[in-house]
Amino acid sequence: MNLKLNLKMSNLIKLMEKKEVGTSNFLPTKKEIQKSSKDFVKDLIDSGDHNPQELLSQAIRLKEAFTVIEKNLRDSLPQENFEAFGLKATYRNGGDIPQFEDDEIYRSIKKDLDDRKELLKTALKTKDVFFDPYGNEIPKVSTKPRKSSLTIKF
Image 1 (tube, rainbow, N blue to C red):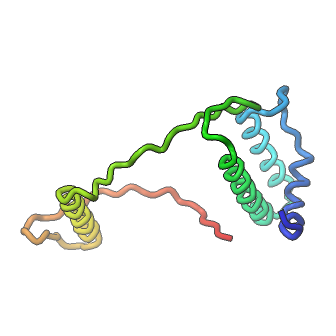
Image 2 (image 1 turned 60 degrees about the vertical axis):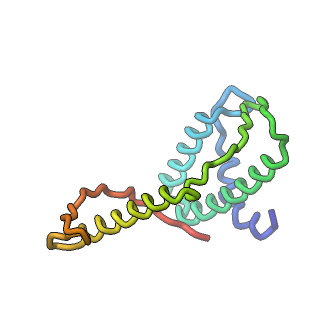
Image 3 (image 1 turned 135 degrees about the horizontal axis):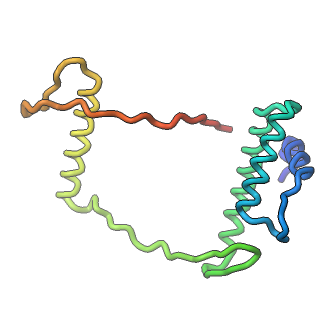
């Protein structure tokens, strides 16, 4: 990590170093890490001594750094199963994916389904009864809510 990135993240890292993971193992289990992490964040937020947005910013940057580190370490390993340091890794060959789009009938049916979706979306937006080009009434289908989320970019 370069020095500039290291300095910006040092606050969160220092706070994390102060927090111990309660475990009897040399390497904590996944559940122990999750519980300890939840407790850590709760303590930080409850204390009111830290800006949660700044800590989130630092956490996202740390996560990105660790994601890159993990990917490169995975890529350096041989493609074989192993069990070590509390991890069990199983190598799976990617295999082949059928290319259904090569089939003309499949493409035609898929296009018809996509067209139908558009008609159903249009029917939902209109107040009046809506018909397809063949004179069939398009029903107003039900909807279900999407989960709300917070999108963050850096």
